[in-house]
Length: 327
Figure 1 (cartoon, helix red, strand yellow):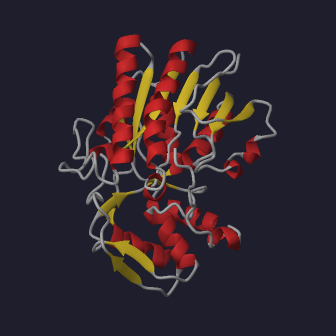
Figure 2 (figure 1 turned 180 degrees about the horizontal axis):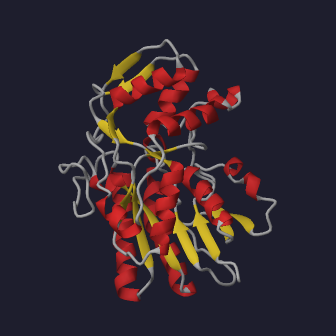
Figure 3 (figure 1 turned 30 degrees about the horizontal axis):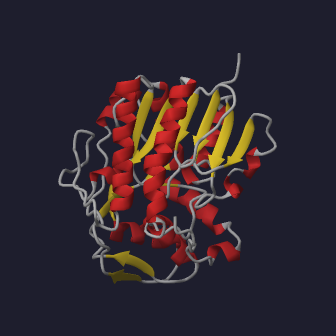
């Protein structure tokens, strides 16, 4: 049987690299695309020797040229943590707008099915809890987080426009907090920040009073949900995440218990527009995809902690990346 051709943008990032692994296991030919602004070739270098894997260093906000057929496109190119998108706000908006436009145009030209990676951040600081797909959100378009939130909301809008107007076969996944091996320790999100601080013997920094909640999904579960959505007939946005909710204070305490480090939790002011609650309603994913998370937070954290512990000392102590591009 002829191999399916899969283009994955943002392929050298945390989620993109795990998607590359999954589609290789499914027997596909994977074309990985990334401009490496936040991704790293280290995440996919184990795939380079394979004959059915190829890497293209390219910025998807520029025209995308792929020879031959493409069966599936998964658009995951985007900064995904506040420390990134606050430093490169224009690139964040461009990849959500121009990058998505280019990917949709390619899907139309190739008659390919495309899945775009949206986010729970489209719900903003929610007034509905837990968040279901029918909730329109509470987003500040001109706040510091607006560059990411609105880029993803626009992504959803243009994807539905291509679906309705051009008949492009589209899927939209709204991804909630995800964790696992290959996360960057210095990306600023709660889990790698807590584990990095614990490994370095530093106090754990919690913003606000720690009562704000998050729900963490292990990456293997997320990839399974994304794969099922791509292979389904469902074309509306769909939440994929783990509804097991925990406060950030409670989460920091779990990290301390896991690592055994005798450090303190310290509190700093809450960032502007930081969501107070984040918990997915996955009723539709259960019904439509027959999917729900299988990996417990205890099990997933142990795997992730062992990954971070295995990093070289220079990686462990690396400070957040400074971006110099002004585009």
